[in-house]
Picture 1 (cartoon, helix red, strand yellow):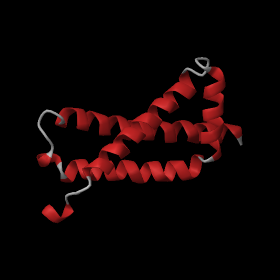
Picture 2 (cartoon, one colour; picture 1 turned 180 degrees about the horizontal axis):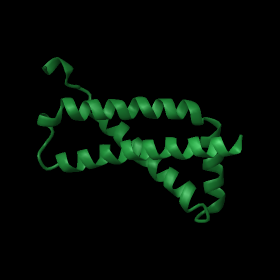
Picture 3 (cartoon, one colour; picture 1 turned 90 degrees about the vertical axis):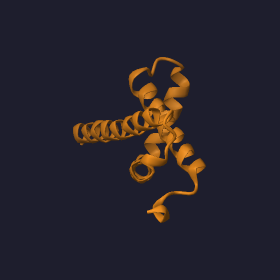
Picture 4 (tube, one colour; picture 1 turned 120 degrees about the vertical axis):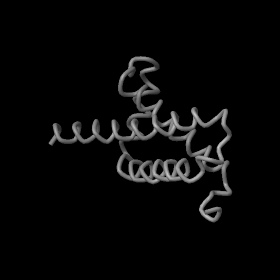
Length: 110
């Protein structure tokens, strides 16, 4: 079982923070676009131009985070385990919400 455990914990943590940041940007641009309106419009147009590749990469990253959480669950420090589970749960729920939102948006536009 030790063969499956990731030795590159820094990359897993970086991926987790990047996905949480992407979720924060999504919430900001979708629900609070009037706060720093010019920046939000630029970020949203940039993300819209790469939406499909970004969604695929995000799915792979979240799947990696989930599998890493399951495989390394017993090896995670006890003081960080609750935060790690909550963070991965936020990433999974955020991804499902984004896919659902983008699907509805594209379905109504065509």
